[in-house]
Image (tube, rainbow, N blue to C red):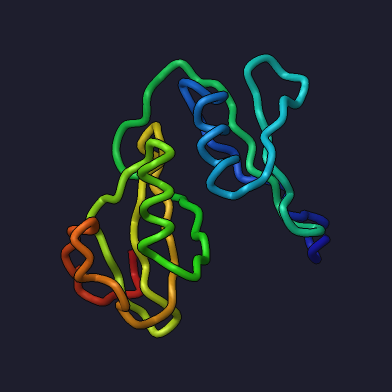
Length: 142
């Protein structure tokens, strides 16, 4: 626990269809989704000892606008990760950022919740015919 007595337990995602959204994330992260005893709620993880879980809670309204908080996922091969996201029903937003820390592709899950795939710093495979992307000006501020 931190000095305040607080510890990061989970990130919670509001979903119209939490079972569908948790299944997407379960396959993407290769971690099982499970019910947690509340009607319609699902959870994945933690995937690392002491790490946070991802909780999916049902809400009646669909997502509107850009997410203010999102997950960043480290990947070794951006093209393969993009292909998997698409195979699972997610999408590539065509937004790319290049930082010293890595190349970031902004993606969306099956309900439009944004997240980032963070690959190696160099743009190794941007010319792939399966990934049509535009470069976004480098900025650390979002």
